[in-house]
Length: 449
Ligand SMILES: [Fe+2]
Ligand SMILES: [Fe+2]
Image (cartoon, rainbow, N blue to C red; front, side, top):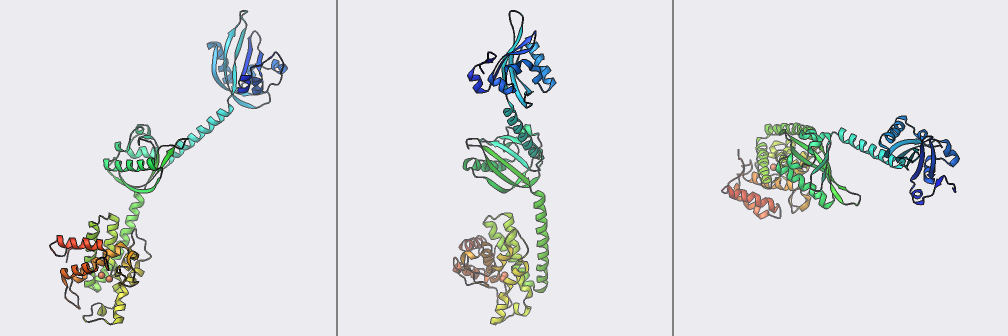
């Protein structure tokens, strides 16, 4: 373009910045432009330029009017954004920065630069769409969601989270869990957050009970993951918590219904054989006391108690004259009695419990050294729950009168446990049982009625 009309400033051309001088008064026309300007507006020759007016490039009349109004009032515009239609008919976003210059002979010119900002605008549009989508998702999510910085301070929460603590989302920014939850609970939350921050490992599906500011407890499932910056550095955590209270209550109700149904079966056993019923009640009691000594949680305690209450339910199908036979049992009779563990297992194995109920009962006559029945399981094959039942069963049986023998007493029961410690019976459980007996003045430590 070796034309005086074209300004040759290669740095501006290389950067794609259009330079222009435009006669404003008395007659509008382009005086001089660079090739980048020509490229942006799709004007190919000085002849074409002579025919076009700056105002004609504006697609929106309101933008055009605002541009010229500012030029007139302020004498300049700075990065004025507008949509232009090029001579080739393409719409693009431009930014104009220019000043009104008045010459000595009172002629007015516009001198300035123009930039094609379409790509920037497109990115801005995409970003804003992503932002709107994310915000929409956050606000409509029926789960509590938060973003925290490296100091566990809240950067952002969604509406659901804010409702849960009774504040507006913006009122929560900058606060920590210690502002909303009891100290012990907030401490555990920060331990979890720090674990994610320090290891980069997420915590997925952790079940937690949360005390809400209104004094109610909810059961929730929480997932926490690290947030990274563009250099893959962990800059905070984000988490999502789903309220499971209604589901947990439903589960609890379902479990209670099941337990009540099974207790009815236990009652049926009592009506038939009062000895077995009081025996199972005592075994449940002993097993629960031992488990409490081992600091088991509520759920596991319920499981071991229920296993105790039901462990001999399988005896319901064994003839009473064999069960209570005063003399020695024949091999056949003994093998029939041995079936009670499997009978009960078969009865309840298809019912789902949040603890291994049927298997615990199936194993309650197994011994660590493989001398038990019915499957002669050994060591680790035997559930810890079943090992507790075994010790509890022995303690109860030996301290009670049976149709075929007198009670053997707590001293002999203790001896049996000591002799079998680590061989037939789990040493840890034996130690707990023996220390309970000792603490109770060498008497039974459970309710014996
Ligand atoms: Fe049994
Ligand atoms: Fe038993």
